[in-house]
Image (cartoon, rainbow, N blue to C red):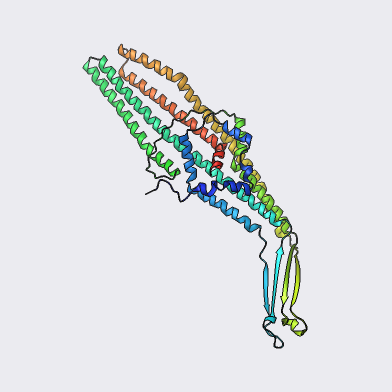
Length: 449
């Protein structure tokens, strides 16, 4: 049995509540949209989603195993910063003179030394900056996953809402057929004609009832899918009450492209990984410089040659050492590797940018096409169908047309309304995908605490 909420995996507690600390510590404040970018985000659509949809989005973001796993990856990356900024472990040596030339004290035969190596100035700082950028890049990948989840919840909510409105539309048509049957009963006196009409109406009613059953059956997988995103029991009913607003895309193509380039975490991830390689190259350069070591040694009075000098007591030595990296092959090889990696990241970033811009253009074109279909029905087809239906009723009452033509007109009108319904929700889906491409929900994701 599934539980309604998996509170054992609070992704928001793992990542989003700690996001403020990550922003301060790892320099992720730059990831937040600027004031102008925030204004852009508000201008993609002229209306917000209903509170019902936003509540589902917040619930999905709060309890999601994939996001929780991604948050743990960020913690793992952040924990490496303490590792890379630490000095190498000191080397401690302990010696014992096993075969003294004469009897001596046991403690006097020991020698103890310790040496601490120090890399060239700035080496550890460069390593820490590299790890900070890698942690920030992991955070950007997490944000991309969160935005994907927001889109999936939006699409799931829209699918269920469309399913409900489709069922409502079919029930309305079924009720209209019942009214038509009452109207026909009052107008006809011929029993034969009445029988044929009754059979035709029953056939049409059966078609509608079958379509209603199909719509009802299609609701279960849609409900299960959305419940899975919300970490609820699959069989838990979802009673959606809010009306889906018909939102307008108020931002132009240049506006959307600008917001996409400013807000997309994926593009920032490429930038931060490039900066991480720059710091790695700087660290490699400093590692190729001399390394210094400081230490000391304490020798007992009876240790080795000290035993030949009875007047000598315990001796203390200060030590200094320099490691000179003469063989440059590995440092030059790393340098070339990092340069090639930076070029690859820049090319991948450019390819991703072009892909995002092209996809945004395609989504805008699909949105405009769907909205034109909605406008066509609202402005032309619906008034034409209403007028044509009135004329058809009058013609049938005057025995100028048959009943089958009247039912066919009703069927065509239902298909036109169904097409309008599909176009409306297709427009909302395309708008949701545009919001995903432009990261319009980024502020909501980052605001979770």
